[in-house]
Length: 212
Image (cartoon, rainbow, N blue to C red):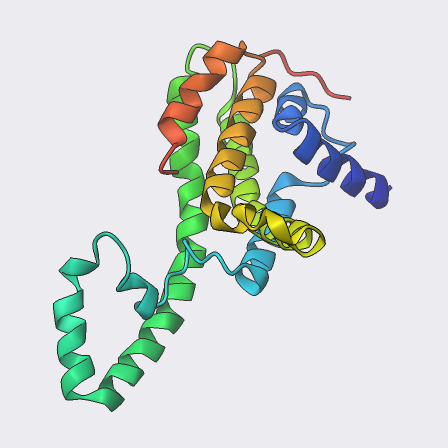
């Protein structure tokens, strides 16, 4: 049933990252909800709920990035000389940024799949397997900020002294992503713990067929 497929997908997505990719490779697909569908659902949830906008930076947020010195002078000229024009520019930029960000996420999947395919070129996997792996990774990247944010807020609400979690929000995000990528590589490609580290190094900051 659809309910059992969704349950299996969510369960293995979090407790055994990469297992669904391995089963997809082996042809064991009937028990799962589509990873691609899950990716698009998480995509929508991310843009509706997440306060972490690393995929979708507003003009104001762009001015506080490491590279902001390249754009700040021009933006400040507009801000100082023509305030209404700056507000119009800000609104236009923010709207365009969201559209571009959604496209960028989708386009990043095949690019990441290419990296994965190169790393695992000796393994007898198909192109679609690598794409499913990339979809799996990006689905987590989209949903993890939402989960971690609400989880941290809940913990701090219950134990106010643990505000250190809020202060280290981005470190927690990075740690969670590294752990997920490592387990996904290990489970999806049935490789050793040491071999799984190869993909973490690449993705940081970022077979016989059986039909069941």
